[in-house]
Length: 189
Image (cartoon, rainbow, N blue to C red; front, side, top):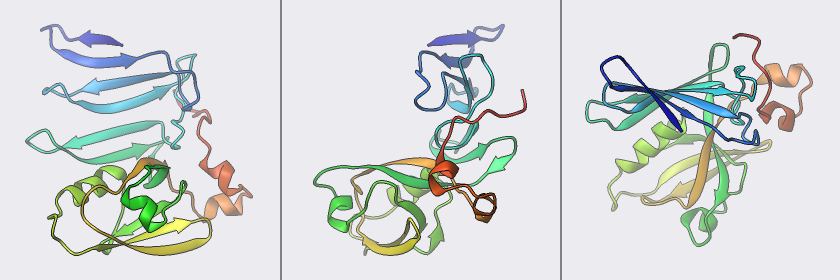
């Protein structure tokens, strides 16, 4: 990692190197706010061209509250894109195993609200009381839509945000797997 400072000596940017491209990028540039929190990530390939993270986005902006708690995130390609949390891994012995969640499941709605992104989903779950009743989780699995009753506490899954592909992808003849792929180059510099 390298860090860039402004003229007063305050850190303004972190650059992370050494990614092998398996995530869709080789370098991340992270801009810092006045509290030193990383507020914007830009993903670059080995030639320093903008590229997409394997989640399908090229830039991510983190939004923090006044206490410095991450409360939301926005995602971009050449313009804003919609994302959803996707299960990357099931943790053995966790609630996710007991519920029957699977890798690749996409979280569509939780407790009657759209799951706009991972940050919002985690913030919603973090605010639940431990004795609260289970909430409904609606999940997309391939062409199926499934419903689960999720208790408060750790879910026992590893999640990552992925760009939501829509009817346009199907109209262009992209398979589900092609639509999920990251690493495509962006034509803007």
